[in-house]
Length: 145
Image 1 (cartoon, one colour):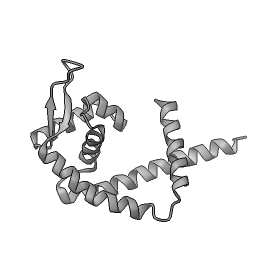
Image 2: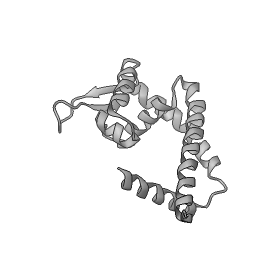
Image 3: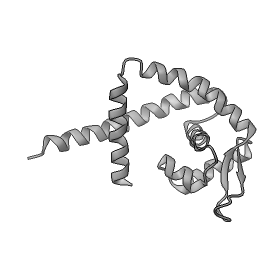
């Protein structure tokens, strides 16, 4: 006999997979107008929210992706002038990744698209429900990390 809690959890997992796919499609749709993919958008967002830059492993941890995948994306974004590698005072061999002036401009434009989208997407969802959902997701991330 399977517990209802197990069934609920597996339904939640499958629903999160579906939501992830939908969010990727939404991200690609919004970012493509700037010549970006959702993967580049996520990297720009993680770095912008860090305020002082992140190492490649730090970006990977923030996004739940492999260091190698993030390294490939950041290398291309540096070549495209969106990001810069700068010395890391805390670690000689692991540079910080920061937004270049062009990257900051792109992030500002992305926010102009993202913010209205976020407001519209959550218009009929009470703040308390969003807070509860976020707490659950953070708890699950912590459990599996």
